Structures are given as structure tokens and as C-alpha cells.
Image (cartoon, rainbow, N blue to C red; front, top):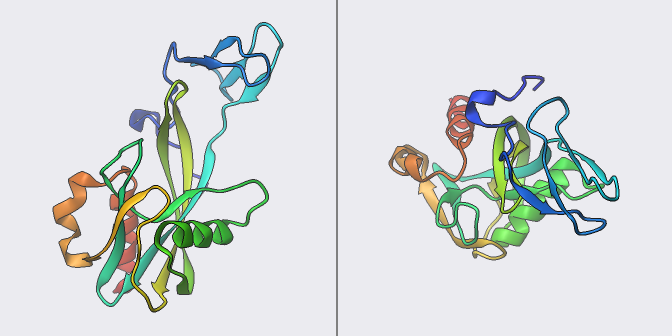
Length: 188
């Protein structure tokens, strides 16, 4: 978990030249592309934001030999295959955030929950560019019920683990392949 993101995968690179309005005064500001930590600083009002990774939490929910997958209903990566999850809110525990996201996106509650791991990736925010994400996942079994797509999910379906290779090119995030490799090892 102390592994640094690899720059080659774009995990820490910003979008050079990308500008967006300052949250304090509205003047266009730009991200730095050098130095650590990268920063956003407004020349007018001196607003300063350190460009740190954003934490995310999600679930790999199993039912028998199937896993719950979503189709993204909004950008970025609209239409791509995803796992239930999203950004952790301020003051929220990691597992609580994962449970909230699962409930918001599918209406399901997970049972027999165990931590699965953390994976680095990146997320694109229009006007801001790419920023690194820390993606924490839990492995769980679903409670009874049928998943119903909600929030930013266009659909929710159970996929046999053995058939995931067929949708690998449709994964929304690069880290998902490694997540499923870990799940397969855990299930052996």
C-alpha cells in the first residue's frame, strides 16, 4: 500500500495547460506540472490547493460464481463496465463509503465483508484534467434482492467470473484487471 503511482500510467500527471476557475475569486488558474506536491495557485487571490490523490471506495460483490458489474451512466467513461464505488466524503470511514456507494448505485447491502486491497488509478475531471485516485475495495456477498441501477449507473448485472475476460477491454479503469486477479487468488 505504500507503493507510489507509476508516472508511466499517468497516475500523477496533470493536463498541461488545463485551466479552470479559481474556487475563491473565479479567475482562471492552472495546475503545475512539476514539483511535489503539484499545486494549484491563483495569482490574484493566492488561493492554494495541493493536488493530492482523491480516495475512493468500492465493492466487489459476489453471488455464487458471479460478480456484480455496472455500466457507467455518466462521464467519464460513460458506457464502460465498472464496479460499485465512488469518492469518499469528508469524515467518512472507508468501509462506510463503500457501503453507501453500493446502496446508492444498486440498492443492495453487502454481507460477509472483508478488505480486498488498494489500487492506484486516475480520474479525469473536465477543465481540470487527470488526477490520481486511491481505490480501496472490499469483497462481499450480496444480501437478497435484485440490483437496480441508480445514481450514476446505467445498468447493474451479475457476470460470471469466468466470463470477465470477454469484457476486459470495456473496463472503465485500468486497475480493475488487477482487482479481479486478486479476487480470483482469494477465492482459490
